[in-house]
Amino acid sequence: MRTSYHEELDSIIDRLVHMAELAEAAIKTASEALLTADLTKAETVITNDAELDRLHEEMEYKCLSLLALQAPVAGELRIIVSAIRVVFELARMGDLAAHVAKIARLRYPAHAVPPQFQASFAEMADIAIEVIDVARLSLHDRDANQAKRLVEIDERMDDLRADQFTTMLAEDSDISIEGAVDVALLGRYFERYADHAVAVGRRVIYIITGQVPEGEDWPNA
Amino acid sequence: MRTSYHEELDSIIDRLVHMAELAEAAIKTASEALLTADLTKAETVITNDAELDRLHEEMEYKCLSLLALQAPVAGELRIIVSAIRVVFELARMGDLAAHVAKIARLRYPAHAVPPQFQASFAEMADIAIEVIDVARLSLHDRDANQAKRLVEIDERMDDLRADQFTTMLAEDSDISIEGAVDVALLGRYFERYADHAVAVGRRVIYIITGQVPEGEDWPNA
Image 1 (cartoon, rainbow over the protein chains, first blue to last red):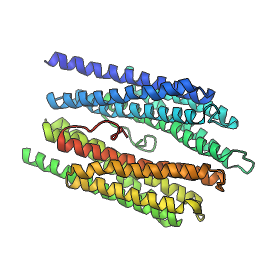
Image 2 (cartoon, each protein chain N blue to C red; image 1 turned 45 degrees about the vertical axis):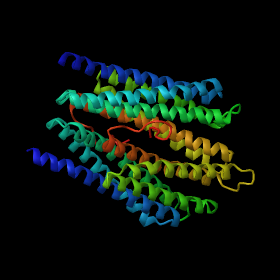
Image 3 (cartoon, rainbow over the protein chains, first blue to last red; image 1 turned 180 degrees about the vertical axis):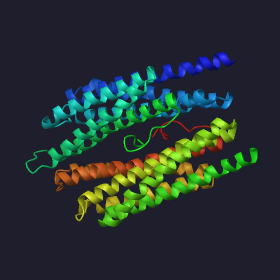
Image 4 (cartoon, each protein chain N blue to C red; image 1 turned 120 degrees about the vertical axis):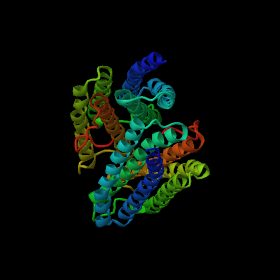
């Protein structure tokens, strides 16, 4: 009984890593759909989001069952309780990718991203892939140093978003109303990717150290 | 020992209700700050948000301690695990109120909400207060029927937001770029209030019934 319990516990981390892979695929494909106005890719992300939501439910149920049926202590308890939060964060990243894909679909065959913001969103997309990649690695390797890197990557995303506002609201701005609405919301979704990755990083550090990192650098996302 | 444990368990619901009251105050004051361009109220919401974040940390720590030190079963376990999620949702509602207040502060002494959207946001504010009010009552009374009402209230919020997009993007729209950016983001924050309240409702139903409600009506927020 205890052996199978410990096997289940080990498998939890594996499943989190798997979910992070799916979230990464969703973010990557949604970015491509957005930046190249690719309807097929947008539809793929929207369709596949159900699988991440299903895994979220399944993992939450599994973790609750482990809590109810076993009496996990110390490190085991930390893994299970953290897993409940991490699956939530990863599922939210998938939801955001679906939001991005829906904007791409809504504007198809036109491009949702106005030409003057193409480079900025391409950079945001690179950062989004970097944060989910680092979050996945920190989970896989139980590596607190990787997790800590997420805070500074998040700052680069915030800086890009601030630049987008400056450009949009500049006196010589030639953006349309529709473009402004899309840039405002897309920028928010990309920013939230990074916030959720930072939240995953906090839980990884909690699993490793038993302390939830706090303070300015680790806002509650 | 067991008595004090049961007292702690009872007090958890009380604390969730208290947090819901703080979230409601934040939402109400942020809406007033927004709709009347009141800088003092905006600053109040932004300052007070730290208290909700502190309670979030404190409650999460308390719940994790109960899980670690006791071996809660069945209904007790459901309360503790649900509380961890509910405090997160309530803290997020406070964060969103702070986001709304920050937009009011950014545009002060001007009004962030363009005149033609004043009525729409006043209605969104009413719905936001209604959702947190109903979420609080459902927690206080452990009332699944109240919790279920949240789904339909959420739909009214979504409808209002759809109307805002229609108005903004209409051919005869006279909104400025800054106005469009603010309406897009503010609308998103108000929509998210309702999503988080629905998520609280799901957990209340789980506490009462042991089943997490699923399906189209209960999206993962």
